[in-house]
Length: 185
Image (cartoon, helix red, strand yellow):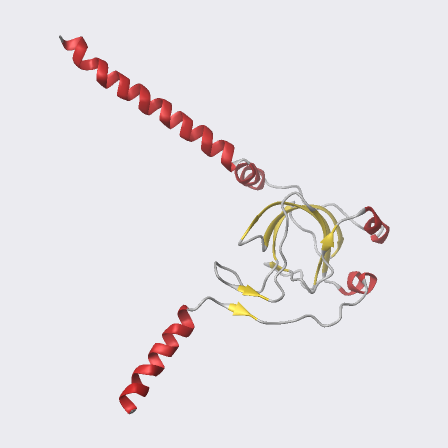
């Protein structure tokens, strides 16, 4: 009996560590949008350029900062307290590339965190009425940000063009090798 217990404890610990992570939480009744905007640490409007981590991380082009510190032209917003394949939580927020959002975040600390309990929502013309007079633009994006966005937004065409170029080079090399023995005769 003791031998089984001695073996069971390390096996259980190993399974607990190796199992996919998840967090369980739920939202309390959401306050009104106006209350959320007034109490949020960071509020900004931005368009999601691309997503990762099963659409739970959004790379966002910041357009207007309504509340909070100055932001770079592009930021990442994490819509879940967990990350990685096989992980999930009951408060996961998923984003759609190309969609413009009003981000209403509880914290302005990096990494920026969001979840489905916040007042973050797709931007609409009706939300423009909530824009404060002191809204301001983000910092200009760096050259690195622009390059990263170009590569991620055009990954398939760039990859296809590189693959096509590699194929053409391989065919040319192959043809040249086929023709070389004939030239020696």
